[in-house]
Length: 240
Image 1: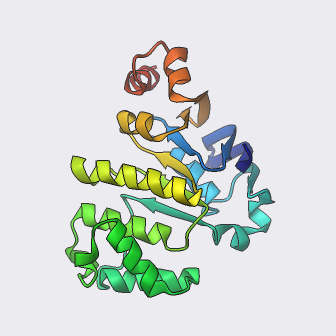
Image 2: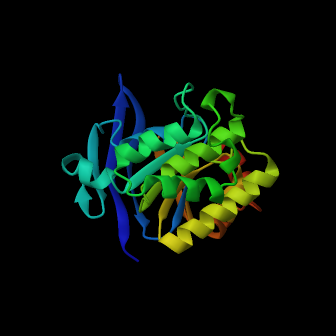
């Protein structure tokens, strides 16, 4: 398998605090890689550096075999991001929001692409609804549509089902797996739902206090920490 993301000795300090502490890992083509850890473990800072939103203090990031810092525009054109905790301009409708992002991403035949994604996520009925009137679950699905507009090769998903009810969350997980398989997308996935991580991820990386403390397929991680589930492992790590 070819590494599509390569991280080497990545470190980030904030005012003397080491948020990410000399981490190294690879992410491979067509895999879902889980990033797990307690609050403050360094997951969000790591994702921000992979998106070039935060500059590393030291270390190296290569995406598609290219150095991120010197090939930012070329790389990020094939990358996208979604989180349950981001918002969109409230005065615009769903259609208007997605149309703006489609123009920013240079999406061809954007109207067709937007309709296709709204249908996929079963939210065609809200396309003309102002964003301010959406439920948190509807907004989450709109953000996933936004993240897929440019047909990315790498998708960063930060707790993508956190605002969804169990039925829609289950449908969304199956959709993401299907989209990944059909389009050959690599996904970096974070969630505090350990059952979800076991279901979704090919491999997982556990972070704590800015360091990687374990990585491997979920079964290997459970064996390493003598846990019956990833949730049990998480509790062991979080409680020291």
